[in-house]
Image (cartoon, rainbow, N blue to C red):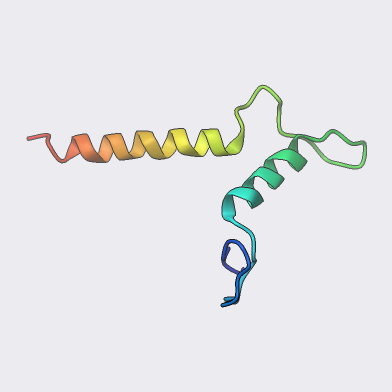
Length: 71
């Protein structure tokens, strides 16, 4: 799989010229679309993927930070 290189510029690196956040938003958006020819959908009651990831990262950082001070 290619890496996400962000926005295209003069020094084009090998990879997808799209920020990872845009790709995740696209996956989330298309996953929520209901169609007869799709096996399933992402429930609209679930938080957006980026919000869920930010929350998980914040919790993981909090746990990591606090665990360094546990004696």
